[in-house]
Length: 547
Image (cartoon, rainbow, N blue to C red):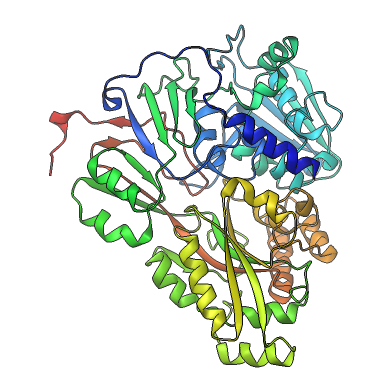
């Protein structure tokens, strides 16, 4: 409960208004003279992606505010250098050594003026805070680091140490072949140790997650809770000055209002447009549309800690009642494929033998009757806003409700606001949860452990509350080898266990969609979460042939 309380308290503190910055310069009369408007439906609970399990900070803002040691190329799916210019793997995957890039500047903000460039102290501070439970910063704004907690990194990292000003070494207690991929996620954003020291001196440590300082292409300028985040260009960004002076992230862009904002030009970019609007988007000559395969999954989680859903036979019977084909047609409009596994097909460990759960309401009814469950009532908890893995969660829930009604199961839909979802789910009163996961890693481990390991129950990312020791052992076996073939075999075994036990029902793996105005250039749509806006620009009027 302490974790939940601290998280909600933190949210309340954050929502009190702007990021407590100094007085802000007046905005330009028209943002289009100096930047662009990025429209998304979401909330900001923290400005530190390490403290989030999902949401806007991970999906959109982290790539703008921070850099990581490594990145994943959105086209080749390979690890590429970012803050680390090179790295080496030692001790069969138990030791990782990084050589840092020189001349990387931190952001100069209204609340912090850096006196030095990035060095090993910043990397050591960032990760010791996450992994070392006795570190003075570990408990600041709560001791929860959901993504890394779900991976049990605090128990698996032996040390993070500085070898010299530009070299950092991570020692693990045992080999972990997925380690580099986890460091390439937005959850592993690097912070400033100098900024932390300054906050400690004035006893305002809590501000580190509310007034961010990173090395990314843009820095926080203004935050209005529930309305917008204004980002200003980081003039000394290590990859070169971003092309746009500012970006406004419009947070209130939900429902059909999003599309009208795009059509009228109030939005320049629309993240995750509804699939039902694709025809309009495609037919309007003022708009462009980008579609790419995504590393995401939408799924239905059964609360396996609660009867009768603690019985796999019940879970299998309910799965038979869901008409996947109708979901594809009514929700995704051809922008997703029916999922047979919790792993998307784009993953290198995807099991091609995985079978989609068949739709057989007659058999579902018979099985439930045999189990003595003819008058079952279940609560289905559903996020209210569109998600990267599901453009219309509430509509999906209504379809599932109608499907289950056909087999005699009454489903009560409980809409849940995103920021309170995790807290409420930890009370374990729910029966079913419609949720999903998107990752900026190509390693299968970034799906299995955060969503389904025993450790992920405590980190609030295992919505099924499912703990299976054999499954956890298979995941550990997959991490001990640097050989791809043996890791693939282990992950196939993991997928077989999931198919038998069915703690979650995979529904869809969707394409990532992005719609934007005809004059926008340089937008990168990555399968692995949001990309930097550093290369985004607007074509001049005379360069654009208007429709």
